[in-house]
Amino acid sequence: MIQVVLFLITVALVAAGFVWLADRPGDVLITWMGYRIETSFMVALLAVGALVVVAMIVWSVARGILRSPDQVSLFFRHRRAMKGHLAITRGLVAIGAGDLRLARKSADEAARLSPGDPLMLLLTAQSAQMAGDRGGAERAFHEMTRHENTRLLGLRGLYIEAQRRNDFAAARRVAEEAAKAAPALAWAGQAVLDDRCAAADWLGALEALDHMGGALDKNDYRRKRAVLLTARALALDDRDRDASRALALDAVKLAPDLAPAAALAGRRLAEAGDARRASKILNTAWKLNPHPDIADAYANLRFGDTARARLTRMQSLAEKAPGQLEGAIAVARAALDAREFAVARAALAPYLSAPTKRVATLMAEIEETEHGDEGRVREWMGRAMRAAGDPVWTADGVVSDRWLPVSPNGRLDGYEWRMPLAELGGTAHPVIDAAPPPLPEPKPEPKPEPQPVLEKPEPAAPTAEVVPLRKAQRPAARPAQVEAVIPLVHAPDDPGPESGLDVDPMPETTQTSVAGPWERLKQMFR
Image (cartoon, rainbow, N blue to C red; front, side, top):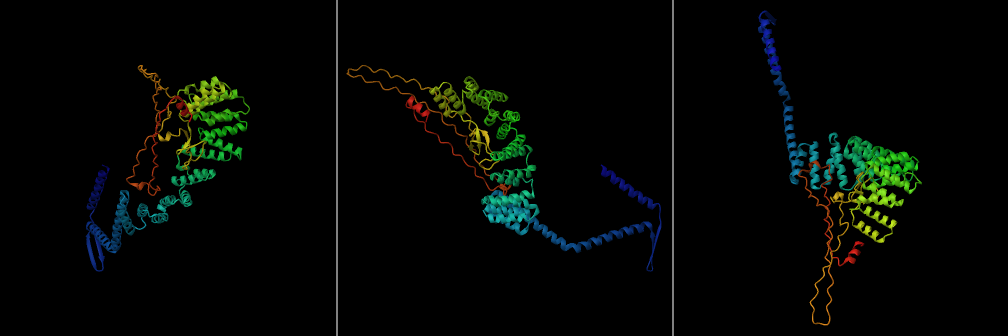
């Protein structure tokens, strides 16, 4: 609407100008080189306009003739570039489809038509990777590093190729170079961090984490820094207790629920005589994450306390997070040390219907200490052998007796306090019944009819029905791995298709018949 209004206003102004000139006629006289030209003003104005238009046309034609070589050259360059881009497109699609022959042919054509094009270099590198030509791939990635816009992509490819040939020193150098070029680059910072962690260089790992802080989520950064501070505190624990305490306190500030950091800080503060601050840290950590290490540090908060004082302290700690198994075990352990057997039994009572190994073992200790009843002790130890497991420090399928900052696969903060089979989809139910069902009564055989013989045959021994044991629960079958249709997103970002480690299904154990109650009792203690 506004454009229509502006057009009408422009037309009105032009018409008004012509009317104004028509109302004011005049003559124009030109004398030049013996020629005399006399005409009206309007005709002279139109003649000047026509001359300007003719001059512009002549200039455009002359300019086109003068620039025609450049235009022709530009046309052919543009046509060549279009053919190159079409070759690159065909090559990338061929790589996604797995057509190696077409990919290599398109890469050669693109290299001829569009040399130096970033996509051409990427196509060359990926086609070389697909063909197994690692030397050609590295040459393409080196060429990428010479161009500013493809430098990081080339460094990423060189890093992956160095990992493929197990040249970790070269991979580290490339990752450090990429991290210096782009501190916020996630893969480079993570590679440098993993390398520092693998070498137990916790100070260098902290510096690498600070450099990549902008690429991490705030909570993720705080958690990783707390883990690294705890690892450094544990490394300095035997050499410099003061430095270890300061690092543990910094870690607790960043991650109050990190049990190893809280336990270490509590122990070192207790040694320094600051029991009040240690109690505050341990109470906070217990509310967020009840753990045996925290309970142990809280039990030894004050040196020289009696067993009853420790029991009172553990009862107050357990009340901070009621209904937790760890709290019940901590109270029962302290009550056993204080010889308060009724308190220990009451703490474990809610968990006796389906006890874990620690609960059953602790009940056996209570029976042995209080009554010395060997039968009850054997019963509870037998239940401990059949009971469900307890949480442990687990990472990458490996169980550790203590917390470690790095998992076996090099993953920072990989260890978790959980059931070992949790990552395999197992349940927390006992593998075998906690209490095996009693054997059925033997069926008496009918008495034989009296025979006219001197000796009466003895009746056959009663047979007991076989009670089959419950088969061990096996982890759920892993889903079949499906190869990516188009791996362009991963190459060269991934070192290649990672073949998942198929876990062989657990073989079914052959159940043997139990001949009698004595044989069954001996099997319980094997």
